[in-house]
Image (cartoon, rainbow, N blue to C red; front, side, top):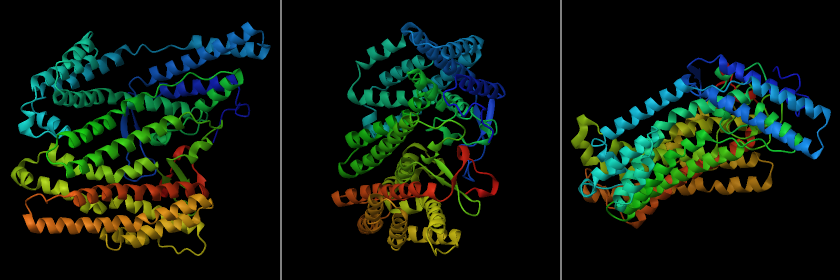
Length: 549
């Protein structure tokens, strides 16, 4: 890897300026769209187009703010009489390069975003009558109850919120004013709809901001560009120019300007919406016990997503060494090159733990929101039943995720465990068969967690992994109990009617979904601890050719 010639001195202001210049040059070479992968080590992650709208603006503003803060720090030293000749030259260098910056007005980009936001918002508002069933489901209100809601008031407030997002003046006050006239139920529907509109209209800004971060992380070398790396690796990492910034500011006795996590703020929309759905199920859905179960799924999904966002925010502020890929690659997502040239990926634990929960809430979402016209009447007949019994099918819904984890476990075992046998892919498929069988699932679940725990050298973590192996027995047994309750209930009421739900039924269904999430998260946690010891962490999470999973 070719790094900057001043890498030996991480506090070099000239090295920081050269890194900035390299990032600007790379940004200038990008077209309106850039084709990149989100996950470089996954065969199912093709190159997708990502908009570079506002990327140069974000980058120039970042450089201008950082150099301006450096100049102010040197000015403070001059006022205190501690500015030497070398610092004077560094201050002049920062000021000169800052004067060379041309902050893009991005007038065309801003107008394009405003028009796009306005069109999206107005389409959603104009079609709000068709979305009433969806909005009703968001707060789990039955159609008869939803007719009592002041839909005109909710739609009017939604329209004002849409105008606010698209830049119309003085509408925020109108939104607050109209919100005071709402009932609790009407306000809840309007809040969920407004969150959805704001998220849809601002989501287009996320790729540009992440491209800016990717360019700065890659600015300390010349070998790789944004098209050669996966964007997902850079979400929670601050290497390259970010590491140089911290080193230079530390030498001056200051801190770099805080970077607003624009992408994470926008991506906080779905957790808020999931929280609205969770509260809606618990508050407005008919019945008492099983709606609380479904509500717990949405609440868990919102909590795990919020945890992931907070983890990314905190890891962006971690210190990283200067010069190339950076040692923070030990924080997932990571890619490790193991024996035989294969690449193995470690993912964030909240991301993996959320997969069973998301699979569970996907069924009620599809049944309530996506109307399959040819099977409309059949859907109405069995929708409630399918929504209730979804935990019974959960092992099949997450079988693909378990195959990835089982394959990684076999590769770790083959690298670190003396005398371990091969046939990794074959044994991974056998593990999936046992996993979905439920009856034999404890064999493979407890075995994998016990083996991974035994490979950990840290005794507290080893003991924790082996205690978590007990979940491999408890969760499948709960699933068998749930299947028994479902079969007994369906035998009593018939196959086209929702099962009778009692407290045991509801509690078991909730524990099954959350238990599978805890199991997958525990396996991923143990793998993330072991992967750095299995091989070499690859630069910027790259996977070259045949080494992909």
